[in-house]
Image 1 (tube, rainbow over the protein chains, first blue to last red):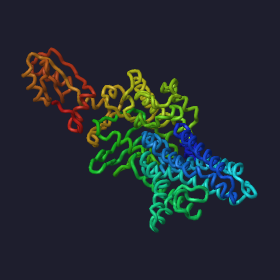
Image 2 (tube, one colour):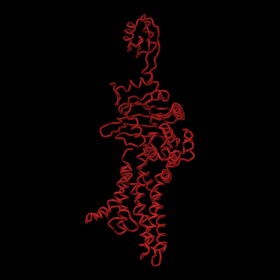
Image 3 (cartoon, chains in turn blue, yellow):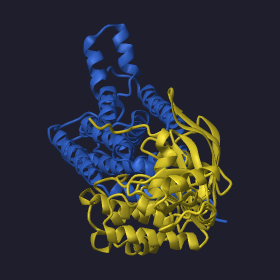
Image 4 (tube, chains in turn green, cyan):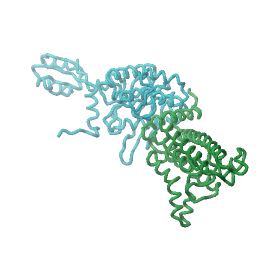
Length: 249
Length: 300
């Protein structure tokens, strides 16, 4: 009798699959260039800043747009399975669908966290090098670390949201469209619309976050903002898992 | 071993598979036949856990497919030769599959060589022809050296050499004691490959018989005689069904060859020819499925 396949094997398979298609390399290049370059440009354009975490926050600005590539990558990891018919082969190899979705999610999450951590360090270095702050930007400063940590966490969550949308909609165009609308179009549109209700809804959407702040949206405190993004990611993910388990391929 | 018990799959009001009860046994090649839309692929999808049966069950090696601990080591499947990410190389495609079931990477090289794709292993599969896609799909099915194989139209798009290769491969796999279920619409191909047939029509089971029996049931005796009407009467009295063929010979069903000879002798009829006509699978199949063709081309 054959023994059960460990979860680590499914992870390894999904890691191989992630890096064996060009779209991953494109998304990675775009993410690194957009966020890294914006960080240096923003820091270079900010001569002085009153506080270290504010200087770092400014250098993180590129994340506000750059994280869109994480949504796209997360969507693609699931939707191309269905678009290409590969899902037939994948689900014959890994028939436990929630397990498969979990493996894809962990792989995308790891990808987002590692790259974003790298970029966060690059942006912090840019602030330290280019922006003059009383006392300088110290690596051990708890406010700086919190800002960077929140940014990395938020980037991981939008990647998960991408995977979840891919599982719910199965179509690349549909899931990317909905994803961009949720994180990038609707929050500022509602902020511009004004009014109490629009403001509330804007705050309840998973807007991209730059460090502690919501980007182009009605601002919230960071615990509320992160909770909103996490709730969307987990909620859509659970819906995706249920639909995947129930649906025919 | 694949067991279907009352398997039914409906899409809305259209019943694709209707109360199918069949057991596919190991050690032989079972041909899965039926007109387009008769439910072959849907049945295979239910077996592989890709589609949920509306009612009834499908098990492989005694378990529902989704509960198999290491599925690729137990079951290999080819459902659609185009099921692959176009941007991945053949090697990475197979490597990803192998890793998902903790199969050694060396096995990937083995199956690539087995199906003859060595020279294109590092090409993106976007450029693959249908035949190369079939070879890649067969490679994926064989990765885990499985006990059960389900192949949907594996020779579709293959060249004659490839068709012969698949035939010999299936024979070898069955002889090793594996369960082999293969669907095809190429009758001559099935006739040479399968030992046993499962025939579907409009989602229902039409036949579950050994190949030899199906061909035997549709075989006939042919006689030529200058006293045709006389012999035909005598044969009908003996219980045979007699038809006149185009060349003037009589075709008799329902009587064995020696019986026809005896009837002729007793009726004092001279015979110029007495022979057995074995039905082709195609003829036997058409007779079975005549009422069950869903999409029939009409002659204008």
